[in-house]
Amino acid sequence: MKRRTVLAGVLPFLQGGRWLDQLLLVNQGEIVQKRFVGIAEGETTEIASIDNDETTVSSKHEGQLGQLPEKISTAVATSLRETYDSVQFQVTVDHADGAINMFSRTGSVEYRASRTLYNGVTVGDHISFQTSLLNRDTIISLSCLAKEEESLQRRCRVDIEDPTG
Image (cartoon, rainbow, N blue to C red):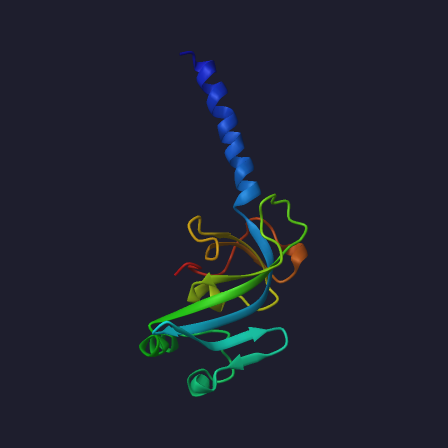
């Protein structure tokens, strides 16, 4: 087989991979809500919820969290995990309408996130991110974080040490 034949077959595939990455793998939008829930014996309890209008903390956990559940320390997370079988951190993203992504989501979607990512973002932030291929409702990588939509890029420096931790 000639070298040109191999290159002719591989080159379009590599270029198509770059195109596919641009179309499918980057989601963008504004964070409109943060919340976390505890799950025990199949029942879900909303521990705290934060949006533009208000912050709500479950009366059961006010002493533990106070009125500032934007950042959850390791100690508080450990304490909550003693009460619940599972604690899930979630962010709701209002997807950008003008996205080039042909197969991207639209509207508001709630995603599971790590505690580190939850702590590193605030309501009103604009993000670009990737989701798990197996579970599209889980953010696995944060590509860019910006305060204004105009500043959002596909990739930029993110000052969250390990958004999947």
